[in-house]
Length: 292
Image: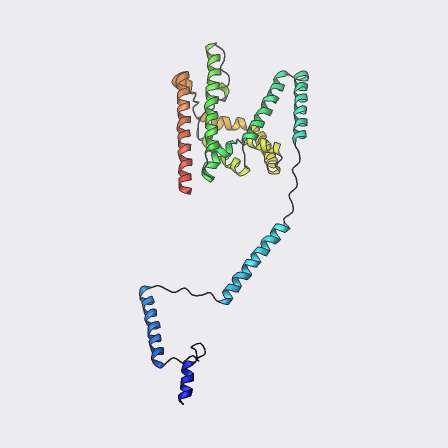
């Protein structure tokens, strides 16, 4: 027996069999785990759980499906067609316009040829600048941008100065002032007509100049709008006498130089435009601040 005991003592600790834990050790370990759980419950901290195998597999399958769908969508898209070179078309159109202008000046009149050149240049400027009076009234409410609105106000200021100079020149020369037939009376009919026209041009997507510009660009919707625009213009011209007698002449005609003089009328006009410009600028800054 002594030899057996000595042999067991001489055996290395790696070769010894692991002993079973006693009941006291098990009870102490359970008490420790219960104390840890109570501390975690009191502190409100939760130990992170390991994700289960099912959640890991579901995430892997969803990622693979998303990558496959993105690859399929990218592969199903047709390749973009290369853009055509439009420079030869532009040169041909320019030559045609020059030939047509020469034809008008020789066969009809030089004034009509000049009107054709000015109208073509004006349409090109509108198209390249994307300038539209509808956008100047619509964008502040829809997008908050007032860049086109301020551009329209600047255009009004420049034209006010130019037309005032022309009218004043005729006045100083003792000649009839041009454009006095367009000084229309102001009444409720003016406000009602402005509201109806504003609703129509927002629905149509353009006013007269914007519709003509987009017809030249080839938009089919604006071609339809242009057709009904012509129908409405002809109908309005046919019944214009009735509207003028019964509604338009009911209000007074206002010509600012008659009230404030030539310089005063121009200053009042420019002051109103400046106030609207400042309000438009503040409106855009306020919308941008609210969006951010």
